[in-house]
Each structure stands twice: as structure tokens, then as C-alpha cells.
Image (cartoon, each protein chain N blue to C red):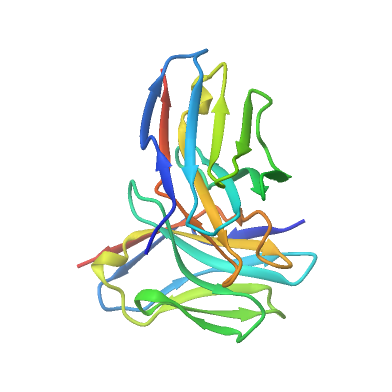
Length: 114
Length: 112
């Protein structure tokens, strides 16, 4: 069975400072991992994904994540936060290929202060 | 680029009524997934279809049923609605080329 744990329910940063959203996963097979973002009252938008290619994955809007198998982690980072990054972020896993159901983490709400 | 379309975007129903949610996948996507996101919750997988056949089933109540049609659109039928069914219902379609599920904007269902 697959599962995801997002270690922080809320993260607050100042504009222009780095962002770190932490995610640990559990999977019986080689996982595919994703980060999705949800702005208030909006749908889910894919930020980036890992599907067994390069372990450092670059996504949209300057975000990136590193797959670390030894630590079962897939943390999301951004060097410099922007006000528009304020949203809820979900770490997501699916086992094997990404054709199966997605299992979501509990979400991390990112607040960006001016 | 075309996206996943869901209708209606908002729906208000009374308890014990029925509701039908529709999902139109991105053209040429043959696999559709339904997820339910309760207030303050993470999305939970309900059911999926591939080539009009149910491919996986999650925590979908027996009061709910779904199907995929020949044009690959899908409908989620919900009967005997309960207050706890109030949620945001997402549909996603799968791009087999880049192995990614793309989500629609969701249908917000409120049961009074």
C-alpha cells in the first residue's frame, strides 16, 4: 500500500525567502511522485512529477523537488517565494506506473508575507 | 490547450435527492478518475475507468455509481444524498504519453 506524509500542515515565509515543503512517502513498488498546487476555490494544478528518470525534478514557477530513495523523501523547494505562491500544496504518490489511483498527502498551506 | 471539463461547477441539493456530475476528459484521453475532497480534507480516490470499463474502485459509497461512455466522458450518479456528501468532486483524465493525471476545475456540491 502507498501513503504520503506531509510533515508540515502550515508553512509561513516572507516574500523573497526560500520555500521548503516536506514530504515523505511509503510505497511497496517504485513510486511515481507528484506535487500539485491548489489555489483557493480552484482546481488542482500539476507542479512537477518524478517517474524514475532524473532524481532532481524541475517544475513550473521555479519549483523543484528531489527524489531521495534512501530517505523516502520528495521535498519541494523554491529559492525565492512570491506572493502568488500562497496556496495549498499536495504531495501525491502512485505505485509503479502513474496509471493508477493517486494517493494524496494531507496538504501544506503556504502563506507568503510581504 | 483543451482541459478537463466538469459540469455543473456548482450544485445545491436537498438531503435524499439525487445528483449527476459530468466529466469530459481531454481529447484522446481514455482513462478517467473521480476524487472527492471534503472541507479541509485531501482528495480521496473514488473510482476510475479505462476504455469504458471500471479499472479501480476506492472509497465510493454504494449510493454512488459511475460509468464511462463511448465518447470517454464519465458521469458520477449520486443518490440519497447526505449532508456528508457536501464536497468538491474532481475528475481527472490520464495522458499516457507523459503519465500524468490532469484535473478538471471540480464540481462543488452542497447538500442542505
